[in-house]
Length: 253
Image (cartoon, rainbow, N blue to C red; front, side, top):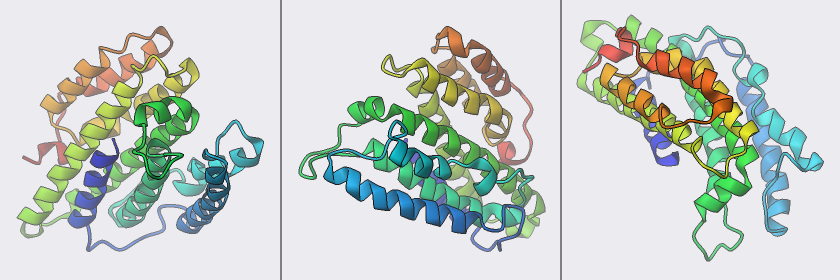
């Protein structure tokens, strides 16, 4: 998942590099997130020395981790506009770094990370991180749609078109990975629900950036997840992905 996230962030930043920030997001969102990440880095050094990472199960760590996924403090309530894109991308990159910290953890620096083991052992943290990243994606899509709507025909050049195409691919791959994650037998029900809730909540925005063919592919992947406790969320997600409405970002060839 982390590779596609990186594609998303780079491509989108390339497409909107000329946009300036605004106050649509909380004024101190970046400061709050930077402080939260600094606190995480501090306790992560201690936990690494103990052979692990900060976890939600540890009361000493939970408050710091919860701050990283505080939607109100970091994202506010929207709506998100073109001028919010740079900040949203900065948030995305930093939250993605947190996600990768857990997925790529190795207690022995000389050994490659065991991502499957990490996904199971740190599933509480990875599930929360994935869900928040889906929400950041959705917020960025809303801001990007506004950006595209304001572009003059002469400004919609090949560079921007290619950047947005890569962005769309990155989002699709990220969402696909989140859906596939829910199929893991090691994933506990409560964490499966966390991811499913985020997919349901953000499905409409996420679908808006994808081609109809790509949506259909995601709906097909979702149909392979048959866990009863998330059936309502998946029905809603699948319905959004089966929509044939195609405007804005969806229309970019």
